[in-house]
Length: 349
Ligand code: R7I
Ligand code: MG
Ligand code: MG
Image (cartoon, rainbow, N blue to C red; front, side, top):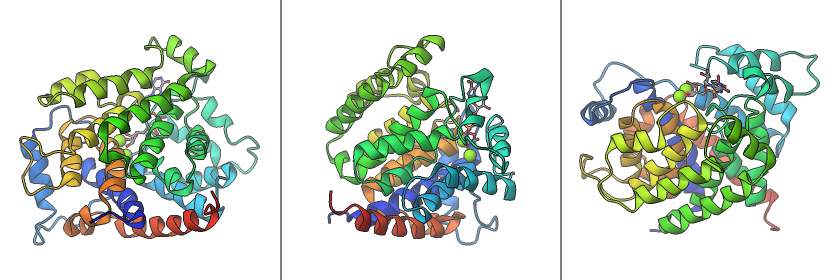
């Protein structure tokens, strides 16, 4: 049966939260044997396990702030979103935030701050963070704006509240565009999907600041496009090892080393894969495979989850997984509200 747009909206936000919650177990681990991943996931199906609910981290905490701010302001309002991040951090500082970004979040709490983008610009010697913290929370932008140009524009500004390096905010743009295309059903044609992402990013990275940052950081020209070309090459092969994915695409905390990786996880898991249970559908495969890469597992699974959830819809998510994760109900509710906003405010386009 075709997946409805509402189901895609719910799937996107709920699977992002799931990825964050189940991925937390392995965050920072170098070697994650697939056996351990499958054991962890089958533990979610066991009602008698006594370990309670899996908690979400900063990825979900900040994504909720983005969704909430877009809803209450009916669009992007940088002051409100900045305040929301700062308030969330002050209420629950122990969610595993990146070690740099907490300085930004403290400064954003100041009532005297006039330029809310300034604290982010002061990070890392004035170049700004290239971490994946902007990308991990980018999905709601694709649920709030219909138009690709708006998705790009506001995902960028939303990320710049904490990540002013082009590698940081362009990672957020790529993630938001991937969710946007997935909501439209574009993953039905994977080659077309990756080609569209590449052409979007060619435009995004054809910018003086982005070119200069790539040079200063000793990266390839058009670094996201270069990684997406690697994704495309790996997609065309059916025997890709986990080691190759890690060495070619990365599994780290930098946006460049995690957003293209998350996109690869989704594409790779569109089909059944050796080592993953046959009873798994594509969404379960995507989450399991993301965890097996190790490294920044909560964030890679969160981003892959958002893209995959937008493709498969809410019904692809096992009920027991949903019930095991803190914040999944709230995410579903936010997705429903964003769907209404999307429907009402932009139906004339
Ligand atoms: O990007 P950010 O919000 O962190 C997100 C990650 C996710 O994995 C979450 O799940 C959570 O665990 O943290 O936070 P930042 O502090 O901006 O960036 C994360 C880290 O990337 C920093 O603590 C640095 O180690 C590194 N980093 C940089 N290092 C050197 N130079 C980011 N930017 C730079 C840089 O410019
Ligand atoms: Mg986290
Ligand atoms: Mg993480």
